Length: 109
Image 1 (cartoon, rainbow, N blue to C red):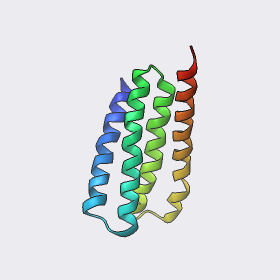
Image 2: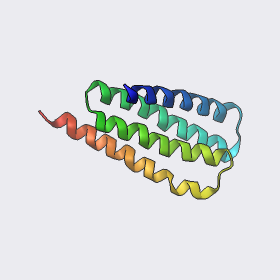
Image 3: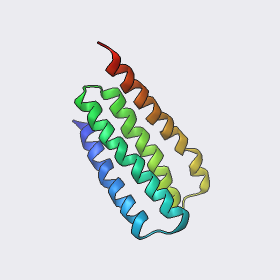
């Protein structure tokens, strides 16, 4: 199932980014890498739980939202223009949407 594959790859990227943030980057770059990795890893787990609950919509929002959120932070940490930070909240909005959708799905009989 493609969503599980993407979640697993997302987890691998998050671990690599977090490790680089902890050991190879300094200043704002280190913080961006750590923040991106933290959000990405949390939402990998959330996506896998959503798949297990058979709620694929929230799972997709978690994977896509985490990718947009984290990858824009990673890009800035690696030298992309600061305006990339304006894209980051789009990922955050998708993550919030995923949580709300998951809550709605779980509340239905």
